[in-house]
Length: 507
Image (tube, rainbow, N blue to C red; front, side):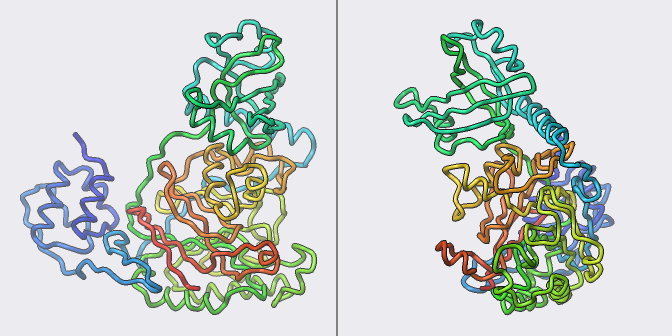
């Protein structure tokens, strides 16, 4: 039986061997790749493994190469050690491999008319309907709501389940703790009730949904039966588009990607001293030499006129001056680092999402920077990354009882559950009604990263690495008034070949 690349890669890491280009194909074609790696290990071969070192005949003698021994390096501020096999490859000579799968830049066609809004919601409903059918264990084929209502007498009693898929409207909790909501498709709408059952009748999954609630304009599937008078649909089960488990892709090159967000250059509370501390680390630390990409998920500058009285909190009052200053700060990073820059709600782009990238007259000051829109679905060395600034976290905090600013990762989990970044129309997040809903999560990412809320986290959720990127801004007067304490100056580093991660503090 053929050995998977994931298993081969783990053996390579255990042997202290670093993969160069072309090695993956030769090892996958080899009749005994695990045995070959064991042979190399027994001969003391370490370091970079090149294609010409892999024989077609396993009996061929391979001369050892000299390379540094596996090392462990203590991190600053009492951070845990990192292991060379978790971050195996220097990025200096690695090729740049960026592939964009979705970006609204140059593809926005909406005129903002009612027809555009209808098209956007119909596209969302159709895309997520297919995902619900593919990823959920529906008890029977879903039917249009109008047909269900016309034949509602057929679907009364627990043995006669009906299934519908539609958009949620007016979700609310009753005084008894039940969840009531409407659901609609192109044919009609109906009222639904998910009961908050107790004791032996309690279903944990239902209880979790009831505890959190639903977002307006979510797309969900419902299976259940009608009441005797047909006015209410009693939900027996609720179905979301999320798939149960995602299998990560591993890059052939073992380089790393770093994440940060919400730098807010131009603000008086921008932590410039900590930025220079990070720059020094980039230019001197062995772990930094593995970082090929730096993803910045929006609000790189503080902007101008974003909120009333902002000018009093600005150190740089000119918008172009803010972007020029940030370009100078990026120039301090090592030349092997390729930056990927998204806009956020403080940037010089339209507020409605999805947002196109920054204008060319801003981009011209930057070197070694790839500019993309918000959100952007792209791959680095074959590893799929979804980067989103995260403005809709405000809506998730307002709409779901389990989401807070202190735990923004829960909002990211809910986005993946819904396969949508910003479901609510007319909330805190302005949305652009494109013919194709650009906020649907088309493919489950290997890494999902947001910013916006000035928190920090890095953890796994059903096979996807969730990164809440840290800010480079100190506590603002508004945050102080709310009693919110940000988590600034944490650089999250994820290796694309092993998916091991570490967060480096600079505050």
